[in-house]
Amino acid sequence: MANIDDEIEQGRARYIGDGQSIPTTLAQETFKKGFPVVGWAYSFWQSAQQKEIQRAFNNWVLDLIKARDARMDKLPEELGPELGRVAAVCVERIFWGASEKKAKRFAAILADTIVTSPGEQGVEDAAYFIRAIDELSQDDIKVLRHLYEHQKDLVHEKHQVDYNSFFHNHRNEKLLRSVGSLGMTMEDFYGRCGRLSGYGLALPLERNTNFDPSEFAFRITWLGKKLVEILAR
Image (cartoon, rainbow, N blue to C red; front, side, top):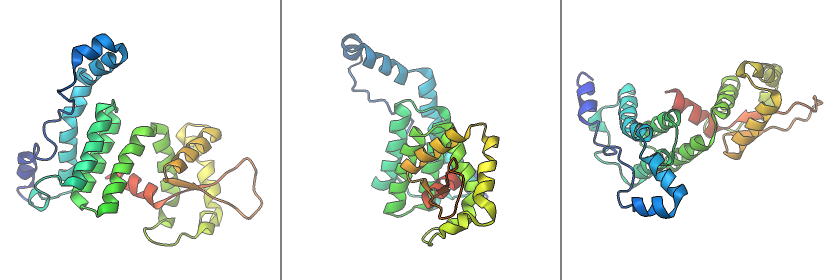
């Protein structure tokens, strides 16, 4: 591992190019004169802030690979079609105005995909995670992490989930009683759980016992757990 820093630095420009994701073939003046809204969008894409995010993205990916102690000689020489598709989704979302915080999360997902070299399904999941991250808000991610902290030990890859375990020892009640720490109302919390469910990152739970009709139950899925752990790395 002695030369890993040098290897990473030497490979810093190898994977995704120089961060220039804006098509040079756009007819700038035609758009600006004929389509004012598109002209405004083009100016936004060319803004200093967006260019900086595009430039920084490559460095974030390489920094995250370095943090995983991955050797450059063990990584693919070039992004193949599968990994290239994940990178392309990242660039597309940055191109359309993803914030710096979201772009850093894209970088975490891409770096994890490069290092772990998953199969086709893993690559598809990575592309899906990027799209979900782009569309979810910071509070949505906070709720996903809250579910993770209370339920991570109950969800495992390719293992049958015991739905009753989410209610053992008042587990769900403890989860709900600590929602105040997120700085949101219960209605907001439930609404965001519903949004996460729409992305397959959480699921609603049914209960056979009597309970307060104003209380609902949700659980994190394996996909949700996997996403939280990728971002945590």
